Structures are given as structure tokens and as C-alpha cells.
Length: 166
Image 1 (spheres, rainbow, N blue to C red):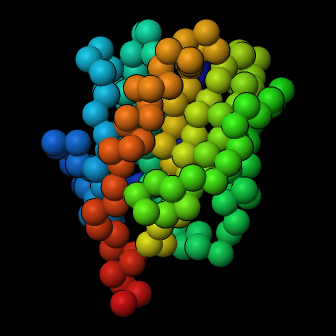
Image 2 (image 1 turned 90 degrees about the vertical axis):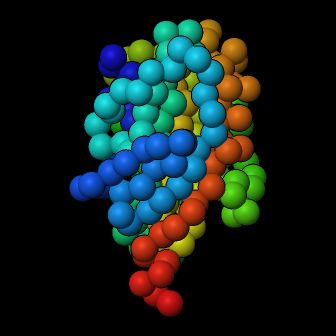
């Protein structure tokens, strides 16, 4: 349970999640499918999170407070704040839902516990979306294809922030 503390940020009043679609009135997005065994859990201020004893924890969150001018690297550093002993295994820019996304896989310590974190950070339509997998290092390799399918199914369907600007 201590691993859940690492999962980030905030949204929401009236929220729904059905058919892999999350809607909180500000954003609506779809996520990919997870393996059987993942159970929904409440993790801090995340929009959605699931945990599986074999694969670890997967979460997704949208923060809609006009981050468009903040570099992705700065947002990623903010997301990883509070961790120590960071050793980056992957640090790249990829495409998620048609947008450039910062992708980081890092071995690090969270409250002294060694873990591996896999994060995709997408800035789209005035919101920052972070899709995260965190697990003990031994389990992370096995979970990577599961998390990649989850990320590949991610799509922003609506953002009130984007529509307010138009």
C-alpha cells in the first residue's frame, strides 16, 4: 500500500467510469483494457487506479489547469518529486493519442522502497494526462506489455478546457 502514495494529481466532482471511459464533467477519456485480476482502487486524487498483486498498480489522471506553456520535462520532474535514487532506463518522446508524450521508465526509491515506474505524460487540450505503472522492480518487466496495451488504448474524447477557448 505504501506504493500508492506516489500516484499523483487531481480532478473531480461528479465522476463516472463505464466501458473504459472516464468522465468528470471537465474531461472525458478512454483507457485501454487491463488483464483480469486488476481491481479498481482509490488512490489519492487520481481519476482512476487499479491494482494487481502480480503486476502492480496502474493509474491515470488528468489535471486541467492550463499547463500548455510548461515544458514536459518540468511536469515529469514534478510528478516524480519525492522519489530518490532515480536511475532512468528510458527517457524519450513518443506519440500517444496523436500528441507528443514524454515517456520515462525509471528505477527509483519511494519512501525507501525500490520500485520501477513507467510514466507517459501527455499535454493535450489544456490538460496534462499522466498514465502510470508502478511496481516492485522484479514485477515491472512482466507487467510492461499489459501497461503498454493500456496506454495504446488511451484517447481524449472531450475537454471542456479546449472547448472554452474556442
